[in-house]
Image 1 (tube, helix red, strand yellow):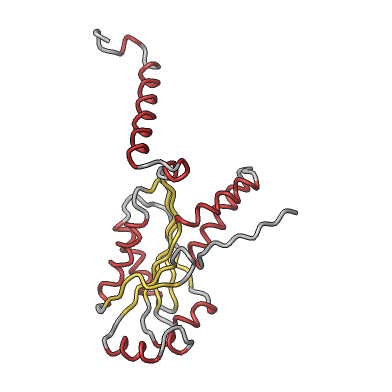
Image 2: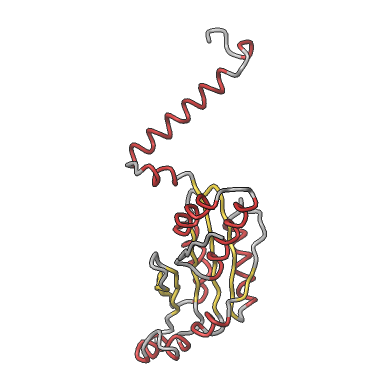
Amino acid sequence: LEVVVFDSHRAAVPQGFLAIEAAKKIIAGVSFEDIVAYVNSQWKKTGICAALDTLQYLAQNGRIGKAANYVGSALKILPILHLNDDGVVAPATVLRNKAKIIPTIINRIINETKGYTYLKLGVMQADAYEAAEELREEVKKRFPDYHEEIRIDEFTPVMGAHTGPGLIGLGYLYESLHFLRGKLEMSSAQYWIGMTFILMVLFAYLLGSIPSGYLPGKW
């Protein structure tokens, strides 16, 4: 039995998506080495964005100081959190209006997954199912081409102990054609020149497969 220790730098929904995609590849017969290579690169195209209802629980477990909790509560600051590339929970932005929470979360995910060719989305919540339902319905409107089921999962008690009730969030995994640029370490100009060449070759191949009778006379 071969075992590889893998740090996904993620938690909750995006971590689950990585495991599901890896399992799909196992079923499809992809080699162990290729699956390990996949998860080691794919985690960078996963993420989560979540909103807390209160800073109280972060202060109680020492994640923020009492002074920060006092000031934040007095100003009614609502932090929007994400997992950075080190796997650390970090503030993405702060709000002072609860009505902006859902649009802010979705806008961030839209920006993060721009240009996707494959996408998985999942909502999570900590004793906030109605708000999670509202988030899911808004996601459906903002991602009109996404037709898969969007699950609502409960935040685990281990993580919920730090955030407290009232948390809602959106997790994602995506793939895009831009992986070519990253793997080949191309500049932006080189990338688009290469993509243009590929499209020209494809067009020429398709043109050559069309019977001559269907082409204009001068061709």
